[in-house]
Length: 391
Image (cartoon, rainbow, N blue to C red; front, side, top):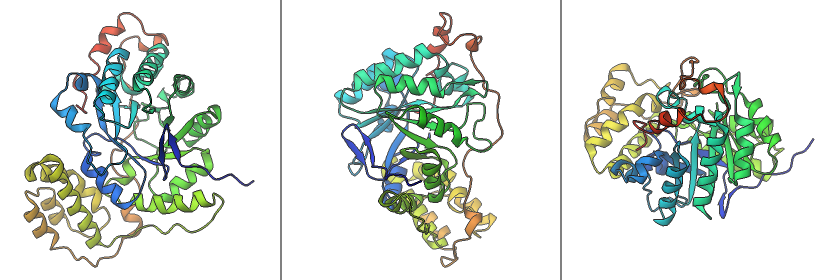
């Protein structure tokens, strides 16, 4: 059975030619990393998560996180919040001060310090609260498109994605992205693409994007074909591999031209020297972002294992790069590499970033007793934005 070609993603007046979204990742998807990924390929590149309360209070960190480089054609900001009024105030601020062209709402964070206060992936369980937040954001945004990113639910017995998807659709969001894991799954096992296909089928009148286990362009095209989604969201797969966006653009250029094409996907396979160049470029962009070479070098250290995964770099040099102190020091260390070493294949591919087994999802007391927010739980929610990374 032949399938019709998918158009580019359309968020209000915004057209995203390559239907790929860079997932917000705290401490990763700052302006520097977004710019680096854009140098390799197209898509929509979303900021790190910013808490709505911190933004309304105009914290210095939150204002820095919602900043964009002039080269970023679509300024995409992800907001986290648990209170409709505060979310509306944050969105109103972003719109009034012309700080965003697209706003994404985070309902997918599985981190215990967030879910134990009823936030993140725990929040859609409270249907009234979820609906109120999304409606408030859409109203405040006006012509600025709002999207939602979420997980399947709290655990296998407490799934929320179908109800939440319909509620978000009814509120007027431009798209819904589903990570095919529950909060309890954390980042373990395999993402459930069947749930993504189920959401796509249940919501034919709104764009649906799939997220989870896209480690290559081939995975992205396979997800499109197996689930029928309008686009994909890529997170951990691009850590230390910004050239993945080059692979994705090439693959989608062919797929959108002919979704039935079986043309081979020829991924970028960088030499060790090319990896070193991307690593250095990332560091240079971080210097520009932080305004401090020292700060940039501290930040790039966490990327070392991802960039050089599978390459014969040696433990001593890896350790030294993870202690790099300046760009000059970085140049000295990188000069010790054999730049001609070829791409190592599978050893450089596959899962990266957060892994680990399934976890019990920590929730507020009696959270699962009702799908509606109870009076005593409002006080707990007030604390949910405090201490959350992202401003």
